[in-house]
Length: 433
Image 1 (cartoon, rainbow, N blue to C red):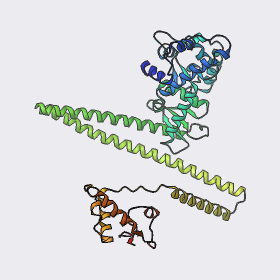
Image 2 (tube, rainbow, N blue to C red; image 1 turned 90 degrees about the vertical axis):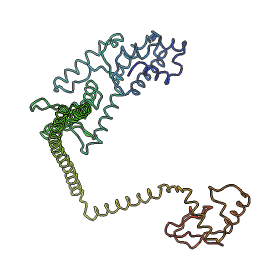
Image 3 (spheres, helix red, strand yellow; image 1 turned 180 degrees about the vertical axis):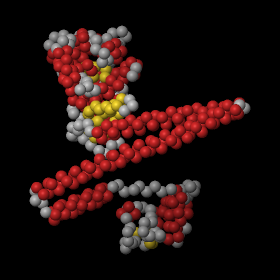
């Protein structure tokens, strides 16, 4: 995000931003009791959070905040360092160096925590502006929830394993991925894992439910290897497609220029690319099939465990089969009743009638009543003799009535001023009085 976009957003959020007297008061340093500057602190804190949320970031850079976001013709707020310092003390922002390293072991993580506590006591308003970046904790939690929600949409199990590259791309970058994983690790909702095949493969195991993430198993390492292979094959397919398109464009250009020899060479490259793509796509399909089998097996395992738990509960509480069957029948009846209520609450479909349909209904009406007085009611006809036409229409409508004994006639037809067809009949349910 550039400073110009930020300033435009600030002016929309703060209409009096350019008022000189108000801006001068806002840009002054804090002084006096806390009650004196508390409203001004709340203003700057809320504005910082609003800007970050609007532009989809949760990592801010103190020099950028002071010198670019809130710069008014060379003037910067003198209180912004105190604002960031108070937010830091209240836990609303944190330094990335204070976060527990999610890619390290437990001993190293404990060392990070002790180091963070020691560094916190030495912080000052001036030193916080020297920090490389700060993390807004509220927006960090929102980002973590967003990542979990996105993963839940593509995974059916209570947890999933993704590669580190994919996780970081979902978070918005390497620093963002580090911060989100550190937060999830602290909540015991995420866990880092790695394995070495021909090269180092890194991944993240994330819990998609309210439960904490389970320990890493051998199946998780195998799944990570398959997912990593899948991504590599997809990248290779993308490279093959780009090269094939380049060869195609070159061959077309050479054919137009009359150089058939070089065009033939590019055509051979296209043929070779097509064969490589088929092989790569075949391997990719096989990997996806294995991953699908693993996911289905995991789902089946969860269903089996749920059935076993249910059977154990029934046994412990001495519930008979008849009681279980009765509960299932009551549940089914409740579901049917709910469906009927939802169906009754559905809005009636609107009737969109074309001009031709209206004309056809008028023609049928003429045949029904055996009168030619309605010929002038064609909507495309002229407006001559309008008074006589209106009177004829009024007379006809007064002499019409709906068939009281017609089956299936709806309330919408009964309340209408025009004749309409019954949905279950091929002829209009009208008769002359």
